[in-house]
Figure 1: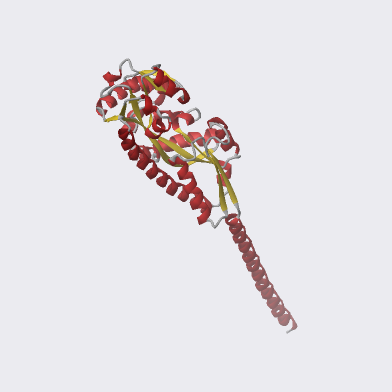
Figure 2: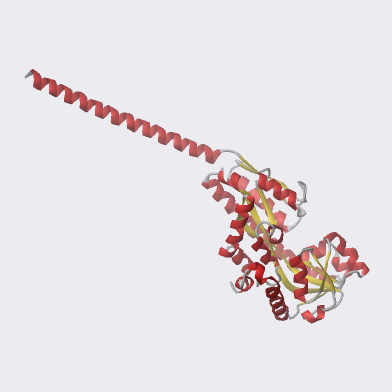
Length: 346
């Protein structure tokens, strides 16, 4: 009888121990879960400051877009995320700004394909004349697997992540005579940016390309050192090239973009919800500045005409055919067989 009572007592003690252990484990799990939740909440609620510098003038559509991004992200985060903008090369030139972004001194930045090609070579094809059919085509290509391959190269080589692509401008020709076909550009000394592709672009259009810095172009046009140049309409207007040119030829031979980048280490320090917020605000701001840029380009056509400039739409297909033949022959081995054509036909 005593033996049976002892066994019963031991069973009761054991059962109590099991219940106590289970309760203890449950309490510990709840505490751990609460700590994890608090930690996640603290990560999402931490204050974040973003520095973003570029070389563009403050009044340009692009920097109206960066100001829109600042307004959106600060409002939607209730001031927890702040953005300091440094336009107009306040922090340095393109190379210096890229260094700051790579090092993490600046958390965000932007650059065009031609500049980024020194670290991600396939970016260079985006600067080739008539690679893109129009603005929508350019944006679709750069947001496809073709653009992603370029973005991956950049991430690997410089530690910066592309989170969006913004329209920058469409390049056209201004000249001292009417240009309708590539043959009309034969012998015409046309300023192009310095660099092998830009020189070949000039040849692809039919001109005699003359590399020159932008600051030298006005005087060179005025004195007859060059006969023509090519740039987006806002650049032509801001630099007063129309004062020393009679014609603007709407060749639309380049659709330029800037990619919006973030430092990868900074990006990985953010919560998923903050990453999503930043991307959402960047994309909304990008669409905002694109519409401003398009409105400005349309308005400038009228302004140029009012100032006596002849606006002419040339034989675009003739320019495209010549460009394709010239550039494929010159760069196919560097870009890869069929790469230029695959972009055109995307």
